[in-house]
Image (cartoon, rainbow, N blue to C red; front, side, top):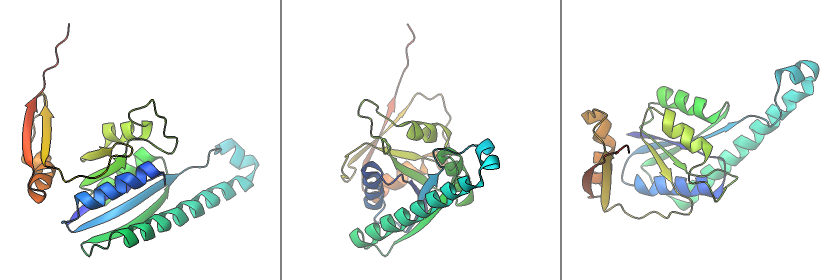
Length: 196
């Protein structure tokens, strides 16, 4: 069984990444964890000490997070009736990167699938800042799905390497599993970086 983490900010980009994950792992028994983290826009310790009403912002953010997670879960269950898939929701007061690291360890996450852009959807940016931070700090494979990229069965997979990192079989198993599940051709590419 695979454990897949799906961070979401409830944007269409994150929904697209979720549907991509559900299609990619349609033949596998999986538990999908929909994760939404929240912190109120205005949250300062000094303000809370002076004005305890600040705690209401946390409660409001939590309620919104839980409501939207349940809505996404229902949307998944209506669109993808897959008996191999279980969907669980996680609504947490934390920064995204910290919580992703915690969940990867706690839930033995095999893969993270997330969109490349957040709710702001800035067109001039290839990867949103949250995606970049998760890519840099996650201790498991991360699939970053571009905005509006529609799922296609992966016929060919490319594994680029510069051989700077020594890969063990457990590092490569996720890509082997995807290749096997989709009868994909797996190609290795040695990438050289030349400093001029």
